[in-house]
Length: 198
Image (cartoon, rainbow, N blue to C red; front, top):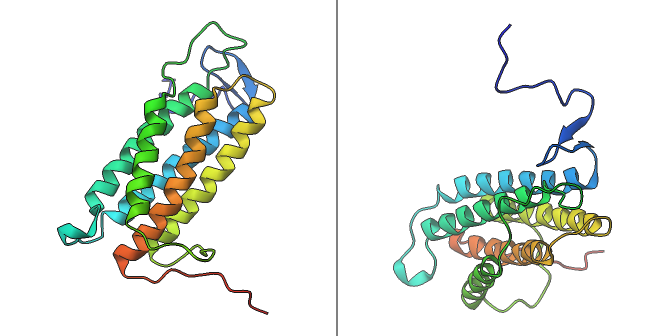
C-alpha cells in the first residue's frame, strides 16, 4: 500500500506534532493559538479575493484595491511567520523557530494604519460590522484576529511568547478596523453607526 503525502494517520487520536517533534493534544492552547492564526490567514485570503473584484479608483482617492491586496498579502506572509513561531515550543525543544517576529513587521502595520486613518472621516460613534461585502468580511477578519490575540495571551501565561507576536496581532486588529472603514468608502457604502435603539 502506498503512503499518502496528504494524510499520515498520526493525528487520528487527537494529537499532533509541534516543530521539533513534541506531541501535544489538538485542543492545547498552543494549537488553539496557531490554529486561530491559520483561520485568520484564510479569512484574509477571502477578503483579498473580494477586494480583487473592486474596480480601480481615481488616482487621487488614496490606496487602490491592488495596493490593499498587496498589503494583505504581506500580512498573510507575516502571519505564516507567527504561526511557525507559535508552533515551536522553545521551552521543550532545542529547535529554534524558523522565522521570528520583527519590529519592522509591527512598524509596517503602524504605517499602513496611519495612512488609512488619515484618509477617513473622524469617527464620532461606534461602527457596526457591515456595509459592503468586503468591509463585512474585513470585520470578520478583525474579530478572528481578536480571538487569536486572546489565545496567544492565554498561551503566554504558561509558555514563553515573544511580546512582538502579541503586539503584531494587536496592531493587526486595528489595521483591519480602519481598513473596513476604508472599504466601505471605496464601495460608496455609508458606515453603519450604533444607535441606542429601544
